[in-house]
Length: 172
Image 1 (cartoon, rainbow, N blue to C red):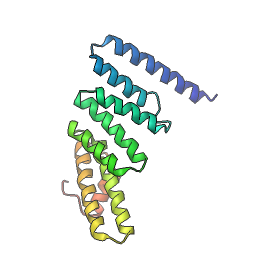
Image 2: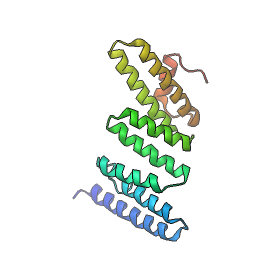
Image 3: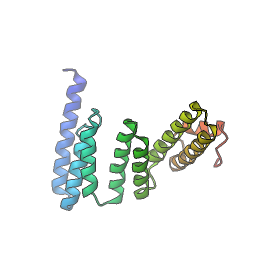
Image 4: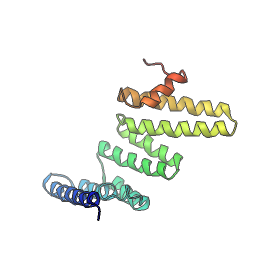
């Protein structure tokens, strides 16, 4: 077994042990503990990173039923959006990114991912020869990228450059 795999397994196991200890000693409601368990099983236990999206989604959906904290819930919804993006289900992904931002408007990665999806749809419209629809998608992508950049100046350099090149940058 490669050393990196052994170290990865050790780190995963250690993280799980620490998470279980924290879950027992930190005062939380049973619903919060249940939500964390599903979230951990979906993310930390590597279902998502191993490409087992169905299992990860199942755990994330369970976590959304138990998690009441809007901030924590926003990250669960964001991760569901990531899986739908990976599966090419862009409409569903956008729905979950919107839900995440409703609960946590300071989630630049959600704005960025929404912009990427809109940009992709704009490119598809160009390939179909529908420049009017493409421009609408690109304008929407620009709005989302502006929000992501405003939240984290200095990040999303490629998006920033695209905004400049396409003359959609108004906030410099």
